[in-house]
Structure formats: structure tokens, C-alpha cells
Image (tube, rainbow, N blue to C red; front, top):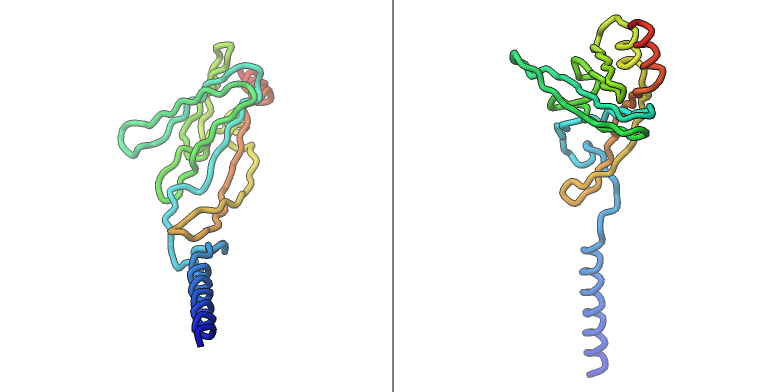
Length: 170
């Protein structure tokens, strides 16, 4: 009788461990917003990347509307071969190249190339309209659940071709 009682206790002990172990298993499933039943107002869609493909350091100064009589200005120093990332707005305004009013590129030789979004000059068109675009998935943690989100990357280049086009008109 004692053996049966200790055998039953042993089985109950194993069952309790199994219940605890199963309740602690992490959720490795990757969900969509629909599967989680959430709607997220994302602040940004992705990033603009601006690469400096020149031999010297450049300073990029971008302007954005702030919907008053002033403009917002952002300054980025980009070393040769490096890049900067700027958020592409979604629910809130971003600081991406496509959202900028102007982009002034200050070259290491002291020259400044003023590119205006929507302008008809060749260098502005070259800067604003010549880009590569890709999507990359990222996995985010939302209240302990994994959520897949596709992020947009739009890549612009400050390169010799842009400088040559600007110099040809100046």
C-alpha cells in the first residue's frame, strides 16, 4: 500500500512539473498586427539613408516645414564611405529626404550644392529622384509577442556624378 501511495505521489509530482514547464514555454510564433488584434499607429515607415561616396567629408543640411513661419533644420556630418539614417514619417512627420524642402550639401572644398525638392534643375532632380528602395522585415516585441514589420529603406547618394552635374551648370 505504501508503494502504491508513493507511486501515485510521484506521478502527481511529475504531472505538476509538466504543467509548470508547459506554461513557461516561450511563444516563438511571429504574428501580424491582425493576428494580435492590434492596430498600431507607427511613428515612422522606415529610413532614408544618405551615403557619402566622395573622398572628402560632407555636411548635409536639410530643412522641413514646421507648419508655421519657420523651418526646421537638421545638420549631419558624413565622413567618406559612411551614411546617415533619417526617419521616414508615418503617423508623425519624419526627417527623411523625401519629406525635406531642401538639402544643402557642403563639400570639403567649400562649395555648397543647394538641392530643392521638386525643383527642375538637374542637380536637384539627380539628388531627390535617384535612389534605391528596399524593404526589410524586423521582428518587434509587443507585450511578449513577436511581431513582424516590413521597414522601408530609401538610399540616396552624394557622389561624383551629382557634383559633376552641379558643376556643369555653375
